[in-house]
Length: 249
Image (cartoon, rainbow, N blue to C red):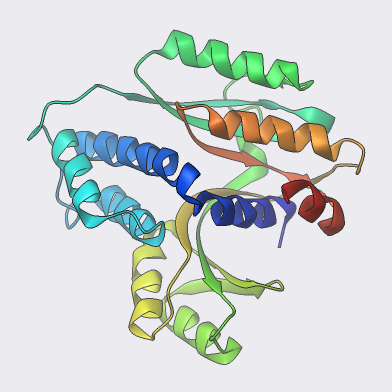
C-alpha cells in the first residue's frame, strides 16, 4: 500500500476513539446534507448519496443521524447552507496536496487552509496544479482478522473490484467509484464487515519523504484534518513504515 493508504487506515483507527468520533460524524453529516441538496434525498436515484451512505455505515454512524442529515439536505428540516470547494497545493517536502472542503464561508476557509499549509512549509497552488497526479477510486478496507484471502479476493472481484492488496492488518480493495456500494454489499453478504468504504483520490506517483521531514508533514496533515470545514485530505507522500508507525502512535 502507498504511504497515504497506510496513513488513512491509521487515521480511521484513531477516529474510532470516542473523543474523535463526534467530529467525524459531523463531517459525514455535512457531506450527506450537501449531497442530498444537490441530487435529492433518495439514495436509489442519487448515486453519490448512495455512496456516502455506504461510507457512513462503514464509519458506524447511527442510522438516525444518517437519515436526519439527508432530510436536512432535502429541505425537510431547516439547516445551514454549505458549498463544496477543493484546494490544491504543495506541502512539506514538496508533496502534492488535495484538500476537499464543505463550508458556509469561503473566505474563512481559504484563509485557514492557506495559513495551515504555509505554517508547515507549503503553499497553495492553482486549480488543477496537482489533480493530474491522482485518480479517483473506491477504497474498501476489510480487517484481516477472521477473513481468508481467497474469500476476500473472490468475493470482491466477482462483485466488480479492480484490485485487492494487503498489509499486516488489512485487505484494501480498489474499485471503480460506481462499484463501491455493490462490492461493499457483497462483502457484507459474505460475512465480512468493511471498516472503511470511501471514494478517494489515490496518487499515481509518489514523493519520497525523509524520516527527518516526516514529523512536520504529518503535523500538517493532522492540522488540515482537524479543521471543521475540511472533509478529506489527499497526498502523494511516501514515508517509511517505521517512521509512519512511530509518528502515528
